[in-house]
Length: 140
Image (cartoon, rainbow, N blue to C red; front, side, top):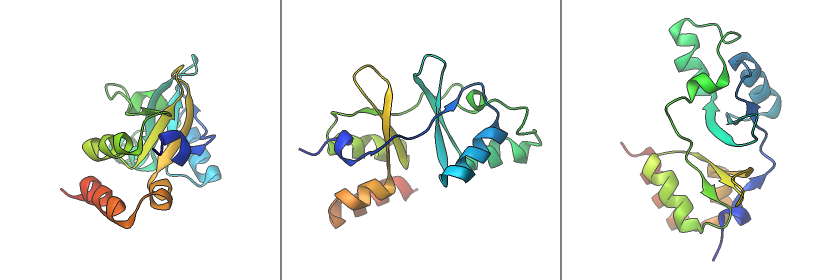
């Protein structure tokens, strides 16, 4: 049985919940990623912010990204995640059911240890399983 911990990429960097969206955007640019997990001062996952969130929920609303905190975009939306021991079937169900493309992976102490992206799935799934996943996430 393949687990989330085996297919994730380790060491995903978090943005602190109190940091600005401007800082988040710069981190995404520097890390060449489209999303960042949001972690609290307690080192626990609070949410995820995407580059699209910054554009749609901040810039398009006329807000200044330097004045909006990362946590503000994830309030009311509990982060979807899996434990590192979860099997791939659970990973696919979670990503498919919630139509998400990036999934944080937590250890048993609920600390983030990695992230699963579509690229990670592409490297580890059969073509059939990957096609089924893509259909579940992108079909409207």
